[in-house]
Amino acid sequence: MLLNCDLGESYGSWTIGQDAKAMPHIDQANIACGFHAGDPLVMQHTLALAKQHKVMVGAHPAYPDLVGFGRRSMNCSEQEIIAFMHYQIAAMEGMAACQGLTLSYVKPHGALYNDMMSKPAVRQAIMQAVSSYPSRVSANGVTNPPLKLMLQANAQADEHLKQATELTLELYFEAFADRCYEDDGSLMARSKAGAVLGHNAMLKQVEQLVQDGTITSASGATLRLKVDSLCVHGDNDAGIAAIAAIRQLMDQPSTDKT
Image (cartoon, rainbow, N blue to C red; front, side, top):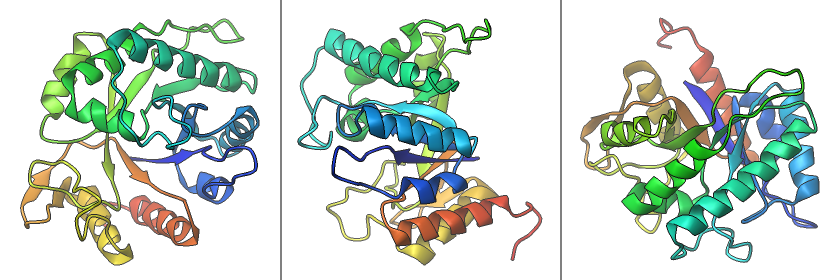
């Protein structure tokens, strides 16, 4: 199981997150592409950090909502979604190539991610956008692998996998370290009490997921999830400490139950 984190979300004079402290602990960096956060200099700096720490690079596209940090849903057509996805992916891929890096996957941000999980038409458009993005040839003449799409692991994972397979698209299924789950495998709404787990509860959930491949829902049900990557957040000192603790927990030998 890999660790992924949303990074590169600073903008101009505004610093958001602690990217330099988070990067040494993670495997995948979901880097903002400028539509909800990030700018060319921030993208460049974040990619340099990823290169320094040998972290896989992913594009983190969003609705065109810089004012709302990409957290507001927009009623976009399929053509609009495909176009702004391609625009942001291409920007990130080009910036990555300037540093000799290869873009590996795409993880939508905020409201676009939520709409992808709840609205079949949006999910289809996003899958179409990623699957139709052309294969790229690197500087040494090698054709890079097709981009993968990251989405939430839930009870519909088999359905989503079938939908992606029809488009010859590979998926990363992710879980969230610090979020409480409903019985259907969806994330509990942040407006509900207990939606965001405290430090100890978060580590307990991660340990259960790593050891057993399951989580316990808010009502106490045991849910089995197919998880390739675990999302963590490095917005503050407590978040960085949590990432370090999760990294240590995940790196323990499987036989070590202490």
